Structure formats: C-alpha cells, structure tokens
Image 1 (cartoon, rainbow, N blue to C red):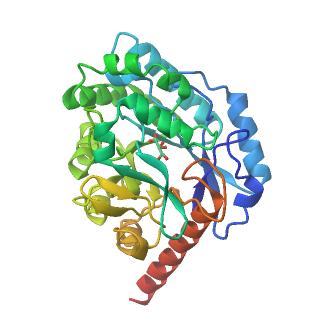
Image 2 (cartoon, helix red, strand yellow):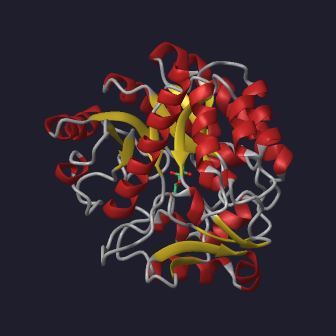
Image 3 (cartoon, rainbow, N blue to C red):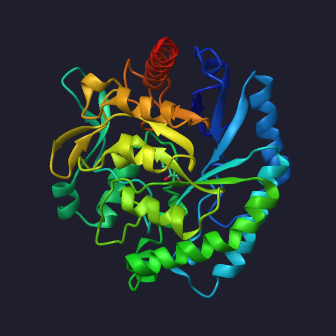
Length: 355
Ligand code: DNO
C-alpha cells in the first residue's frame, strides 16, 4: 500500500504525516520539477530516497518519467530523447527502484473540466463534463485548471509545455491513433533491452478520460487497447498501471474483466471510484463503492485473485476538512481511501483462507 508524494517543495503533505497512515508501506514519487527529456541526476534521486527512508518508508515506484513529445509524435529528435529516457531508467535503477509509470497521451495528461466541484456535503471534487469541454478552447481549459490548482504544480501539466500549446497542437496535427500507437511500439521496442538490463518494469497509465479530447487521438482507453499494448511488445517489463478511475470514466469498461485479462502484466495499481452523472459526465467520488459507480470490492477481488503483488495506491481524493493541497492529492481523503482498501483486502484475504 503506497501513497503518491510529490517531493520536497512540491507537496504540502509531509512524509511525517504519511508514515502515520495505518498499513502504509511506501511512497510513489518522481523528480517532479523535471521537464520531459531533462536529465535525472543520480544524486537528486538518492537525496529523495534518503529522505523517504529516514521516515521509515520506501520509494515503491516512480510516477512518472514523462515521455517527450518528440517520441510521441515520432519526429526527427525521437532517438535522441529515447537515449535520454534510457539514461533516466539507468538512474532510477541505480537508486534501487524497479517501477516506472508513464503515459502516452497526446498533448494533455489527465483532463478535467473542474478541479473543485462542490458536492452537497461541501467536499470539493475533480469532475469532467464533455459538454463543457466541447464549448471551450484548450487555452480556456488550461487557464481554468491553473486557476484552481491552489498554486501547486499539476502532475503532467508542466507550465512550460502548456505555454506552447499552439505548437503542441501543430506537432500532433498529423498524428492519428495508428501513428501514435506505432510511435509507442517503436519507443517500447527501443527501451526494452534497457528495462531488462536494469530490471525496470514499465507501467503504462491509461488515458484519462478514456476518450479523445479536443480531437486528439487516445490509444489506451479500454481492454482492447491495453491488450494491444501488452501483445505488441510481449515482454514482462512492458506492463500496465491499472487505474480504476481512468478506465472507470467509461461505464462500458468492465474493470474486473480487464484485470483478469491482463493477469501478470499489471505492475502498479491506482484505485479510486468515479460517479457517472450522464454520458461523458463524471465526478471523482469518495473511494467507497456506495459513493460512486464502480464496484470496489469486485476490483480488489480481481487484483487479489490474479495474484497482483505490485504497489497499489489510493488515487485522487476529495478535498475535505478545509485541506488545501495539490488538487486530488490531499492527505485526508486519500488516507480514508487507503484504509478502506486495506479493509477490503483483509476481508477478501481472510474469506479466501476460509474457503
Ligand atoms: C493524475 C495522474 C496522472 C498520471 C500520469 C502517469 O493525477 O493520474 O498524471 O500520473 O498520467 O504518467
């Protein structure tokens, strides 16, 4: 059981607090201020590792090493950036870490229309309504995301990249699902020897939400896409981050079924609930099954029964009790979510022993 922690200077949630969550084992972190393609120094990573270990925790994985747009679009600079990516994988392994979460989303990482939708009980949650996204420009969406970010960096929303949004859209103008997938396959084939050598498991994060936004291609939306990923490069080190919240944006996605189909290739799990309000319209509820649309018991049971043994973290939480944090990443609701997931696991495990 782990919690995402953005590191010193970026996260108001401290390691001292995280270590007091019952059942916690480690954190998932990153060199958060790095731009895609920027060099990771071993000393920088070792310094964070020491800080984590001094607090009785371990670094259970890196989320994310972001993939440069040159690799995603397959332009002339991609081999140079793949070389840099491989160097980062080497640095990660030198710090004794063997898991890297990444995504292959065009232009935008996760997308929301509101970072702080107030629910009737006063909790604020992140939400998405495709009707709203359809009426605004990418620029409007970026400024509304930054306005509600509580002065924190948003994961995957590097301001330097977002400042060049028009150039980014131009870079991707000829990229469709097939070419994006071909570029992904090229990237994976190029890094797999390094992953094997350094013992790094790659864990692809699904698209969030699981459909195209602003006409950009999306290739990791559902079971077919994830199966295509693991089959295209059939290597154990090419795996998946099972994100129930991202896959759960689409009510047609049978998440326990996806977990069973990906048995052995899920290296990391992000577990949270979502509440569907209508087609293309959802909000991030509390983790409890009863608060959202997903069956959290069935999801945890599928992970248990398929022998999933990697790090698992509660994902985005609601903003409650006046906490101000990186949106979705406050301490309180994620700690509640983590305890709930521990409870489900204990019950599933003991029930299994009895049968
Ligand atoms: C958002 C996160 C994503 C995720 C990346 C993985 O809260 O789930 O930013 O970390 O897509 O590369």
